[in-house]
Image (cartoon, rainbow, N blue to C red; front, top):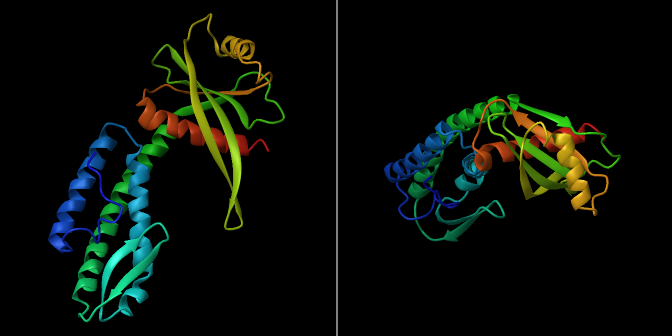
Length: 238
């Protein structure tokens, strides 16, 4: 996938046709990733670019008030506009606004496609607890099995809580542990028992299996969606 710089709007030549070519080339790569059912990092990257442009557009008044100034840099980390005062007309600002007005619908269209693919994949996944779920389900193991392969991938997970703007959020950290050939011997229950024996630091882990009858790219789609599915499921238990 062709990368698009975080500050692409103001980098290099600020020209509508040039930026249009740059954006469409990037979106062509995004579309190919989606055709291959590879959602990440393409979808999260797309969301970041979209949010950046919406932030700038929402500060249109700030752009208008900067008549006689030229936009020199956009600090996306702090989400604010930085201006360099020079004596110029607002032609450059108008060009940037034209680029933004063209780009936002293009990004929205691809975002919709990505979210539709995400929802379809998520709808094809099932989650189930393996054995009894402990009182604290925020640490344990996540089993991944797509139903087409005989392999079960085991990830240890830890869910943490953090506060932002007076809202509480859940974050998940996972690490790959091992994989098992799924069979009538290596069932989810027997794998759980084996993990408890081998890893005494988690004597009573929460274990959830996430499976799908359809095969998806493991790293680029299945695992990221499975992680979000797990966080949402566990949030319903508390």
